[in-house]
Image (tube, rainbow, N blue to C red; front, side, top):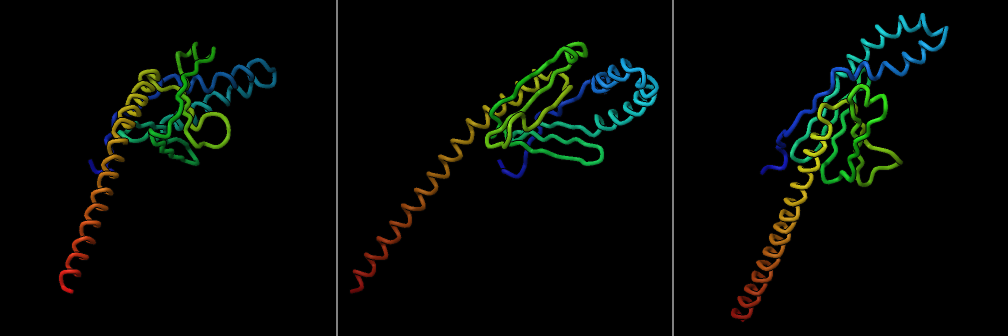
Length: 178
């Protein structure tokens, strides 16, 4: 298989109520404060617009070799995480997430700096299934990669052997001319 071509395995979809989940904590704080009640009337429509745009710009794709995550409104980011670098994928569900039936999927990688997850994805539909697909593909990839490395080592040893044969033939030829 050509290493430049990647096969898409799964595009993750995000839950329809993810925007409501993001708006709820701040809405509760505003509703509990007297000053915040008028601000709540502004927060809900404006916050809804921005969360909808943010969710519309989010995408997560699992390919045969990496996980690609795109998100952002003003500053758009794209993270490509090679599957062989993933060390842990955790599913988290706090009380508010349970109420909205959402999960947070965190992804940690080898060599990442700092503490905490490299990527955090909230609201993926069937997050446990998506996590299983990623880990399954990571396992398949790890079984393929050693064979590739072994083939490269075999190629190197064949080249080395051919070089030795060539050198020997040159010595024999030079000795036979003398």
